[in-house]
Image (cartoon, rainbow, N blue to C red; front, side, top):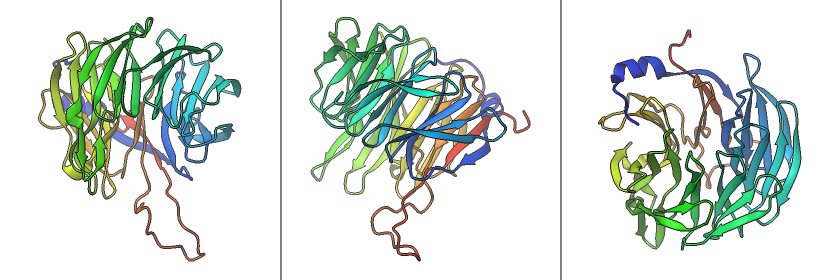
Length: 361
């Protein structure tokens, strides 16, 4: 995935500039561009799918889509952009017929998982959607009617992430111990493991870390596993880390350490075709980073720390824009004082729309 372009040239081409900040209240989990690039879709803590039109100079919010029972954390589109899939914290999986004007229910699996549905990803062929969750199982569903195609059972702990290989023939799944399973999508056979166990620590009877996000590069030759190199579990300290594996051998090729222990977790990432990693991190208290770094470099060529607690990243289909979901500053969690009207102020999630490259482009 590495190409020989100097860092200053990359910075000039890809340095982000803010276009708009979208206020999202109550808090959302992540926001992602549709395949057509004209919509932004986000999953919320309020069990809704929220949508924004990007066809004007400023993003315009559209009516929200309802039907889920809990936090909508997992969102994905089919490759053609005609179907939208979403999963929630109660284990429900829903499919929606999708176009730029309407979102209509297609099918539903009320109990796709026993408890939290953590992640989903649609096969590049568009015929299956993979899901994973806290019940330690990976499941493959028909995108046509929602029927269960097969169950993949080998994990012994909460499965955080799942991803199809670009060729659609295999997929990977990662759990909270840093075990990444490699599966045959057709047979369900486990082909082997990628060892990301250094992303896990048991400290003070608290599990810290795990394989939190998985991404392939465009060729499918490199697998990136994001999380943290845990320091302790008392206040959840750890350096945000990405492990890069050779897919053919499943051997670790490189480790990217992306910050101090208070920067904590890599929450989302993208392996760019120009040979660098885009990543967002979230730490305590209120730490957030957006970083672009090439494997082999000691430092990122882009680093932005003005967005607290970044927890999702989406690259626009034309490659010119990013959407980064953060959390409002001063989001201290429990212990916050009531406001002047006696209400407990909840967190909000500003969505930062960023242009990549020269500001006047």
